[in-house]
Length: 137
Image 1 (tube, rainbow, N blue to C red):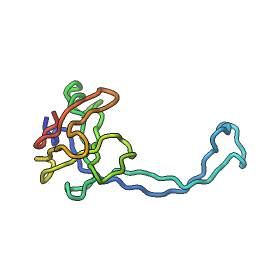
Image 2: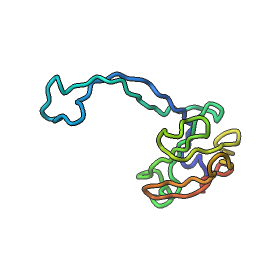
Image 3: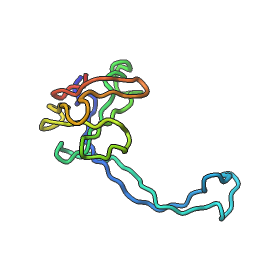
């Protein structure tokens, strides 16, 4: 199935530090006081759509298995594939990282790199497939 039909978009991962106040672990979140509050700096992670493979840290597309089963986009989850050496290995989703080649979405291919070139979802529908010449199969 063509990545374009699966609403594929190149994405960039952006991490922004944000300071916020939280109820500390172990406190009763329904009945707390000022002593139960803690102010922390935490990472907020965003996926920003970009136009080109050169600018991308990864790609997001609709799952081809569920797209077919659902007869379209409604009820179909997305697949995110981060590219090797662009996103830390501990960033979610994990553990996979892919080595992309091509000029854009229409000829994108994952080739062997440090890890496998196949895509295996470890939960949900457990789709296992390949991205080859703009197709996800």
